Length: 474
Ligand SMILES: [Zn+2]
Image (cartoon, rainbow, N blue to C red; front, side):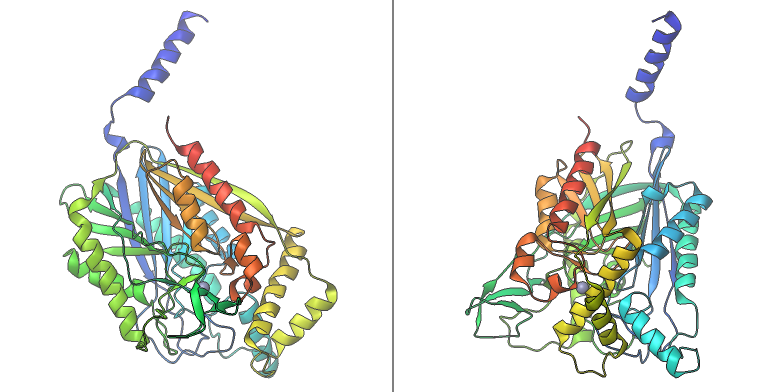
């Protein structure tokens, strides 16, 4: 090694061990755009045709871009039931070209509100094709190209949030929220698996799984004024409280309203990510009280905001100079499907709501449409992207596709080398369930929706833990 090389090595060491310089401070920006479709569009969240009748509250896409030195991360949260890979891929690519943020560092999630539009996937395709056939090639429920507009809006909010970045401080608090979320799978007294078995059902023996009470809240404040302007809240409970047919953001929408009040931050952009809540919802079977779905959604939003506000004195600042992002794609085996099974499933989907098929038979057909698609497109191995973010040496975030069971999210948290690990589901891809191996054996609704073979959940956990260990500084 000559002198020059030694000098260079020393220079590299100096850069790595230097105290933080100004450009390594966090810079954070946020942006919002409305994505409410025209009233009359189909509503998401079920397995039959539901036509929207109005707007309870508008739907938004919200972006937060965080950067530190040369590393940037874009988080985009959507008041949608799910986001498909084809569209998130397109928006991530466009936004990356315009901002320079690597595609792998862009995370687009759905809040999973069931008050969003049905605009993609087997249910929409079946209803859309039938409507076109019956209306001279036009689907009256879809007067605009909503999917293309979404790609534009997502790109636009990332670009705007990136341009709006300003010096900011980041902090985190992780209170526990108890008494709001419940595991919805039950062992029944006869040994069968119950799914949402009803309030005060005397046949219930016990819940089949846990809940995750953590309510991580990441807050960005303007470095100069100290004003809170953007946040991310994650909670592992289905965003499926609001009933009826109007569009609405459900409890995450109310959460923003109440956080703005509680934090005295009228401009706060509150992003929400559903944690791993595949088997968790808001139904308390021990209570006799039937809920009014609209007012309960508001109560939950208010309750989460109050829990966060109460915990705010305990916030911990996120240390600077350590932001890093990793992404990995695994290929998960798809369940086999024969040509006959596919034809039968397609026939059933084409006649949806008219054939009086039982619920689980429809769900089974819906899943088989995915199986067929994934065998055609991906030769029976679905690519699944897992992303991990290191905010600082104690704090990380994992983003997983689909609707992941709570046990799997908890396994990531307990296996993570970080003291605080936030796990978000429904990232970058559609909303079928990712059950545990055990749940595949127990059966019922969620495993019926899953086009992947048992073990898909454990594989996601393994991939996430690999990224987290990779990111953990010595
Ligand atoms: Zn769901």
